[in-house]
Length: 424
Image (tube, rainbow, N blue to C red; front, side, top):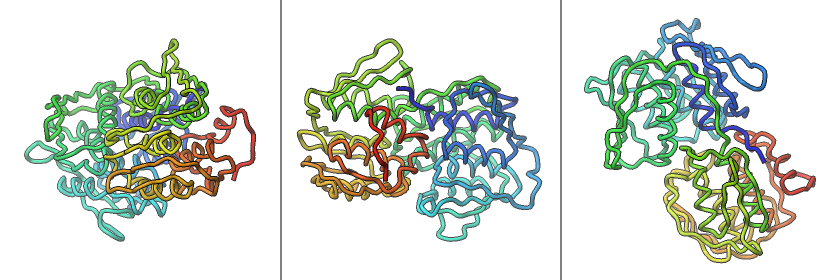
């Protein structure tokens, strides 16, 4: 099977192309609700995106010194974390007030650490409801910090840190970007730094030994125009690879990169640890499930790869021994409270589960069919699809939520399983 482009890499390339010093060409960009919202937001700020043949996009950058031309502009975030977190710092470079809002569930996603940092840099933030949450209006301009250190708390989301790293080259002076305390989902931060470097920005990690606080030295200068290709989304490979594990089958994913910063590359080790056979065949990754689908339980800290947790939880529910998943308290601030949602849906499917402050203890049991809820969350929807492999007759209330990151998921799932059954 061939996966659509990485959502995380698509977002970073789109942003950098939109603030580059000249036009860029992007290939393989994911076409999903999140990326469409990001493109629309960047167009609101003055960028222009031109679709070309064979799926490439020509990006004409925005002018950071231009007037947006309206007394006030609005950006719709939907449920896209990249829009609500990457774009407010960029919008704050303009003098025009920019209002941000999104879906009802987006109003529960935490933004305070990012917005506090912008306030310290001189932005005016006007909240319409609870401080630290959508909706709000941000008005610039920003000023570089007097001490040359741009600090942001990334313990709740790595996107806060990525947003500051993306902003730093545009502030006109050398800066140190610092994240005091614990940083979750560090592979996403490494992906941001790699994307910046590919576009000619100078970003150097100061303490590569992992000492705290994590910090990076960033030199000023707009990204250079580039031709960039987006990798397949390896996190989204999870449900399909899980099908091989549960059914004792074999799944081939085409064009799996040999070296990547994507969190989803961890599937290679995770599935090996749970009893699967993981092999490279040329440029492809091939996963063969254990005989009889006898999956081993796992004990793991997923603080750096939390986006894989819903799929891993579904696999753990189908395992032959208990599993412990920890380090994922930050998932409570995603599209839904994923820890609470996973615990509820696992219990509903007949599985033993204990919800911890930062994780789940999962005790497998024979799974039973029923209506599973997606909570408007793409990862919860694919979780339900996996559970259905062991509990035939399982239905899902919102398959459309998968359009956030895997357009056409239902079709891909049916093709993989060789079915064309009814969908709820």
